[in-house]
Image: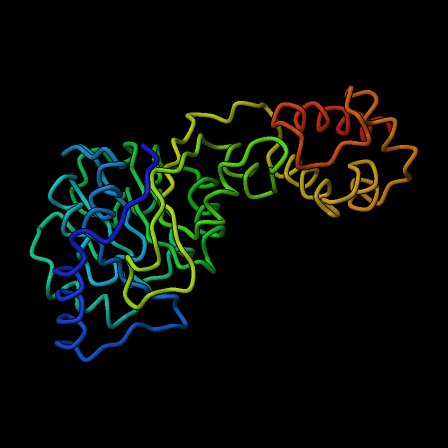
Length: 297
């Protein structure tokens, strides 16, 4: 599904959001990038995209006032809601009546998904069973949160995340428009845009539109590489992404241009191409050639 959603059903959610904020004397905190979703259709689209069953455990990042948390808890077996704002976390403990919700007042980047599933959520049916992530991410931590889960020792099987529209399009970009972000996500899973979300779907209204992205995480990456080494090479290739890849790699790897030309030739890659045109498989081929080059030094 890939469609635009308008503000249908937003009036009641907006009223509910404002009522909760008034009741507890709160305002959205700009420093934490807080924008509360008030569009019922979008909320339904997010929950539907997660494809929840009673056997699922959901880690929700940034539950805010808990309106979506409530919907997730109706469909999932367990919801582990991680909220950084201590005032919002306290509200969630007062307003969410479901007994299958665990609320953690923490920075998600400081948590370990494996530890959460092993003991932080009591009675989770299968300790290390596949879990799903649902998140309305502040724009400034989007890439960090994605990496946190995609690189975790126990990865989710599905991520459904609300991100800035331009970031969503960068995540799903194909050869010709790729970036370090798109490669780092597509290394671990298959991303797709579920729907675009106008700024009016949030309160307070942000300055940019958003999109919902679903990432179907692979059981294992499609290419066999040393991850840290591989991404070091990719980042080097994007050191000067507007330049030909031979120049960008020479700058990023601090190697003579002649050495980089030799590496690209061995990998059967045109040195005049740009890094954003390379496929995942082409990066893997270049990584293998580069690894052999270092071993021979």
